[in-house]
Image (cartoon, rainbow, N blue to C red):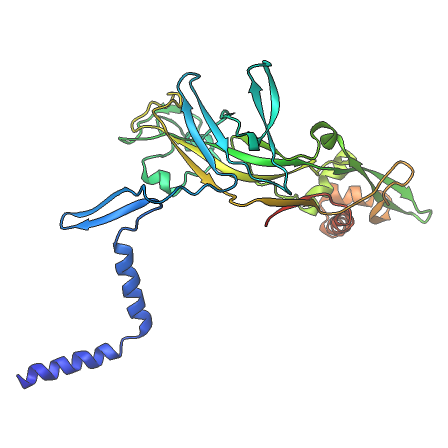
Length: 355
């Protein structure tokens, strides 16, 4: 008996020596082992295990840009509606068909227009085909995977393959905001300094074609995949500028991803089967609040008051062209830095932010 008490005392003493970090880690592991209910779900535990059911007592939260998707059995197409969000107090427009007029019109989101969803991309296209889009983990767990019904080896030989049992296709479509703005363009010129050297300059211009075509009211557009526009590095801009003798790396609009619609096929779907009402729609939202937007710089330019030229190189005549042709890094990097610095003062790229 005394020996048992002695061992219990040792155990309590050792327990007191366990660091808090280890205890917290054990608690976290125990919590992870228990299923967690998702939004609007009820989790019940019984001797047989856990059961999940819908919780209809929780009201559905509707936020700006909330996207809903339905299958139109009559027109045999997927359609979406976006709860109106506002940018600086203005709701975007979306192009829809006015059946009464028989033509496409720009309708404000506040009117809750129905948007035909077309142009989906197949995220489960054969991996050998170079599908650039990853399959989210959630859909991998549901059975979505790259199509292996056709495989291509390193020699380009095509052969028949087999998809795993229960294989499912996954399509996706991005809904995004687009705001037209001025774009910075320009032309290069080289001037002789009279001492055996020359100066290469960019004469920037402001292109307003997109603003004239679309105005400044935001538009809601769809595309298979909206790759986030990454600004080219100054060196890439320099190569493009010098090779084309014109600065063409700016784009006349700013874009923001609002939501992504996913369509998941039933299990064991034929790879060529169309996405009909038997598929399941999911929406991943990227924005939940109203927005503000503004261009980066306010620049005034006119034929009588043109923008100042940006000197990007001073040195031996033809030196910049030779450096680019021979990939001599120092003059290239110096010119790229000068171009980037000069353009930063007149760049028109805008920014979205929440309020």
